[in-house]
Image (cartoon, rainbow over all chains, first blue to last red; front, side):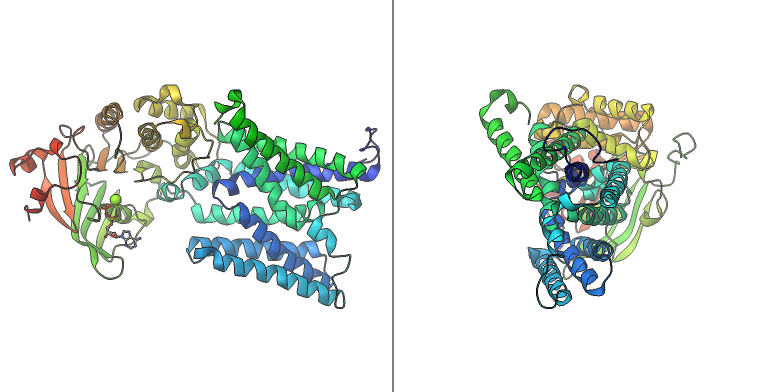
Length: 281
Length: 259
Ligand SMILES: Nc1ncnc2c1ncn2[C@@H]1O[C@H](COP(=O)(O)OP(=O)(O)O)[C@@H](O)[C@H]1O
Ligand SMILES: [Mg+2]
């Protein structure tokens, strides 16, 4: 089905249409979950979980298991571990987190090089940098399925997550299931990173969680609009970045994040200079 | 669970009770043998100098901190066993909200309905009614769709009070909610508390340095400084020398002489 749709250049080729579907889905679910991470000032935790997921990729390559499964297991364990450290306030000074995250990427490199007989081979690179041009129909299907699940999960929990990320102490007194929801958010973040890793790359997923939301925050006047606008900006960045990447021979993941970063810069500058936008706070 | 099937505040049984509560954060005790009760329909103020242990006592009463000694009852049960937590309204001392957060006043206040409705359900028309009623009662009806970070400090504080009002609490606990709030906000704040007590029969425990706005409505004042130094009516307190409204800053020195 994908690939048979008559679209103009650069989306006329089947591989571009598969890439488009996968990137737009990532562009949608990354900001959905990012909306909550940004409120908790945890945007960088997404990055850290990606490092841990990379250890899982290496472990999968070494063990001859599909790396998505091992990455998912490592990422969920890492995310819940980070949440535990945060909850116990044991991660003071960021050092414990840093240790966690760098050990993750080092372990990934060690595993992957062991699997590649001493060097990091081409099999590893798509996980780090993403390779949407070579995603299969089944791969697109998997991303759509996972993305739908993640988006539906966050959507179902959005009210209680909102209450918790905006005022955790109050939420606890009010009897909301704070610890369970924090763990659920951590697990969903991990799932989102793994779902997106072969599309935009482990190194850049977190950027797609944070940047569209940061831009949306500059323009929106409600939480609901922040999430909607973040999704629109994420999906839009995916389409524009992908469209630029083919004629200009760019890595799609890099191009998409550059577009998202440029949008943030333009909006931030415009907000300071254009009087009309200054009311939008 | 709906409001109709829930038992209302039962007279006689205190909404909130501490008996001989002691607590320390390590060395040096913060609370020593503190006893306190709030009954339905009662308006109680808790005062004391900075560091007296007021916020700590509230955390223990609400079950966020365990008492080292003594017992605590919330709605007649141990705090951790209280399941209908929406009966409790809480206004924290300093809600920590990021200033970039683009959330409307209505979105913040709607969170107050989550526990009552069941946090996984969507809000129904009666929930929206309760939210708008709560907003109107603190005088923020016109600002429902304004981002919280565009409001003044006093208006923001009223939004958090409305969040606590939104569930129609049987017990309202407020930790210095009007510190640094302008006079008009203080009057609206006073009116909404009195409304909750008179219309709903709720009990209120208010920690505040600024009692001028509510001095005439209070049933009891509790003065805390590690121990309970005084527990009685404002008249009794006034009889010991000074009227309440005068002191806006810290616990006046003369109160220390009460011991
Ligand atoms: N988390 C904490 N760890 C250690 N000491 C604390 C903590 N919170 C409060 N304290 C100490 O406990 C005492 C009482 O504090 P608090 O209950 O906040 O007083 P109040 O609310 O009356 O100003 C103070 O001496 C304070 O320094
Ligand atoms: Mg305090």
